[in-house]
Amino acid sequence: MIAHYIIQAIFLLVGLTALLASLFDWEWFFTTENIRFLVKKFKREGARWIYGIIGMLFIAAAIYFFIQIKSVN
Image (cartoon, rainbow, N blue to C red):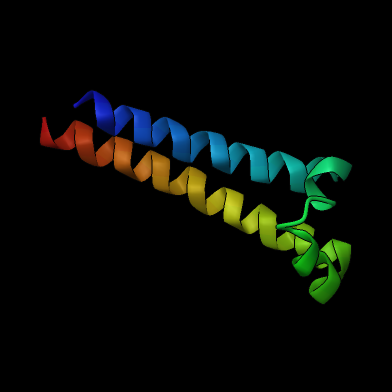
């Protein structure tokens, strides 16, 4: 059961990181090699929107999993 909470925490942390990076326009986040292709394709503003949406989806998934596990017990 503890593994479920660890996975939920990972989802929440990833979601918060992506959401905060999109809100505060973190330079280090958007200049990493893995994200540069999005910035090149959608410009910086588009990449911020994409990562904001991804962050909210990860946070929503963490909340959903938490509610589902609580309802099973």
